Image (cartoon, rainbow, N blue to C red; front, side, top):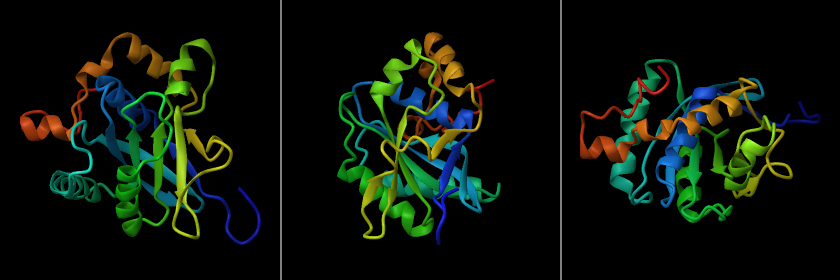
Length: 205
């Protein structure tokens, strides 16, 4: 777990939380998209239990973001979970830099949950999935360092971030081949049509 004074935090993401946000990014391939992770922390592990897709338009606009975070918190607090991290996928598939919008929203979440992480979609890893047997998430893990900057964890943030279910990438590939991303609802969709449920209760039925 890492020696010395403070052990390195690990992040364990459930299959559904992971797949939901990758599918969200695939639904809006030519746009930047974002989402939040819900979970709890125990000892040196942050357990990510669920996720909510946020936006595919105007990611940095504060009013819709604040409305969505309030609604998400109200729903999940009653279930013993809080917002523990932020997910971001850049507009360009070859862009693996963490931009200011992602950092600002990450900072906002960090104020309430100091072990918060930002997970950035890595399209190279995603595109390589059908060719390999990689079990690591197709995301790059960023955490805040002592000088309050977001830094890529480890060499590529691989070892500190794992999926709870080892076969998550195989399940993800099945969903991709069946175009499951078409069914994902985010907060943009919900704000346009409130009959669309941002909790995506039918997605994995």
